[in-house]
Every structure is written in C-alpha cells, then in structure tokens.
Image (cartoon, helix red, strand yellow):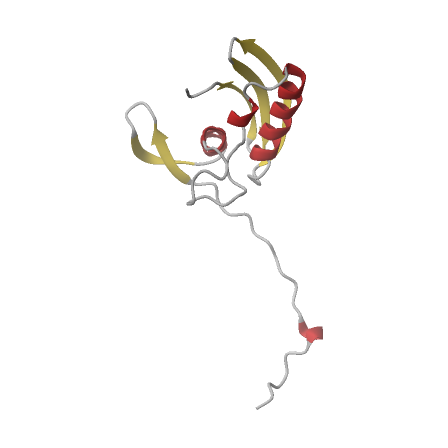
Length: 136
C-alpha cells in the first residue's frame, strides 16, 4: 500500500522552545541534593559541574560534556595559557544558557594554575575562579 497525502510541501514550521533550567540543588558541603534551583544559580552549578568533569572519562555523559583541563598540566606556559582559555570556553559554550566567557586572568602556582573568568549567561553574569592542578 502506498501512503496517501503528506507531501513535502506540507511541512509545518517547527518552533524551538528552550527547556527550563530548573534542576536539583547540589549541597556540596553536606554531599546531598537539597531542593531545586533555577536561573543564574542553576547556570553557576552547571559551570561548576562541567569544569570538574573530565571530558570522555565517564560514559554517562555525551562527548560534548565536560572539560579537558588536566592534560594541559606540564605544557609550555604560552601554550597552557592559550589552550586553557580555549578549552574553558569550548566546555562552557556547550550549555545553551551560556552566551560568552570572557576576562581571563591566569595565575601560576608551582605545578598548578588558578584561572579567573567571567561567564555571561541568559540570566546574568558572574565571576568564577577555577584551580587546575595535578591529581597525583
């Protein structure tokens, strides 16, 4: 039997809707899930989780989730500085709520580095400091 109707010309406009950012609140101090968060607080938590998840390390996450910061340790300082910025931007821009990542300041502390930057999201901007260090 040959299907009837439904020609290609009858394609309707597809409207994309943004998913809500409502999620569970991680209580890192007590190692519990406590309540829910939305908006800017949800974005801050997402940034925290993305930067602390090494990309390709956990099968539960897609290959687009996480960061690739650990492999930068021990590299030349010029390469480290430019790649650190690019990898952080690449990791965070996978979240569609993040519009831009700017204003990087990197401080070297022996075999680790501290990087401070600003995340601009749909819900507002915030400054964050992240330490990249060897887990050895």
